[in-house]
Every structure is written in C-alpha cells, then in structure tokens.
Image 1: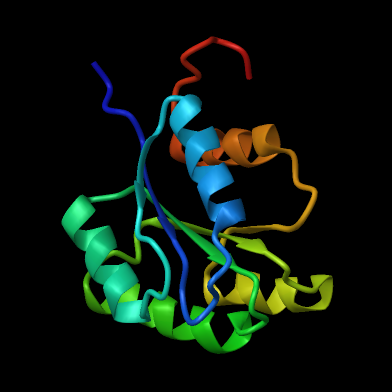
Image 2: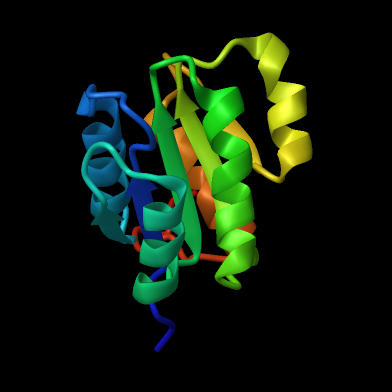
Length: 138
C-alpha cells in the first residue's frame, strides 16, 4: 500500500497569524494527506530540521507578514543544507503577484494567495507528488 504524502505546514518568521495555515493543514488532512503543523515563529533552520525529522514530501510555507522575500531564500538554503531540497515547496499568504516570478526562481513550486480554492491547492500537490485521491475525484 502506498504511503500517504506527508506535508509540513510551517509559519516562518514573526508572523503571528495562523488561521490560514490551520485551514490549509485541516484541508490537506481531510484530503488524505499526513500533515505536520509546526506552529508559529519558526526559523528557517527549525523548518528544515522538521522537514528532515518528519521525512516530509512537501513543505508548505504560510506567510502574511510581507517578509517572504527575506525569509524564503534562507528556508530554501536550510532545506538544501539538511539534504531536503528534494521536497516540494509551496507557499501561501499575502504575497504580491509581482514577487511570484522571483519566488518561483528560488525553487518554490507554487504560490497560493488569498481566495485560492482549497481544492486547487490540494490538486496541485496531488499532481506534483503523484498522490492518490482517496475519493477518486480529481
């Protein structure tokens, strides 16, 4: 039997708003993924170490503080340092569309902004990881 895809949902930096991250974590869990939620105020090293220790397939970064351009590069580097640059990295939050091309160049596969349908994020992760849809509806 194929193991469920494991997703780490992380809140980097000093952003204290986690409602969206919790909504996404619950949506992924309800869709059949195994979800690990780090909680608030995570450093790049904490996120990378959690990705390593939990052996996740996906790292989801949730950020509302506007510090994405200063936090994402060290997170990508920390993942590389611990040998987890193979994980699919996605991001969500209030990220201006003008920053998305540079974020993708950093190695973040997709950015899900406000108003993204939960099913769209779930479908993206399923397609990129080869995860099965437990309900058979894609």
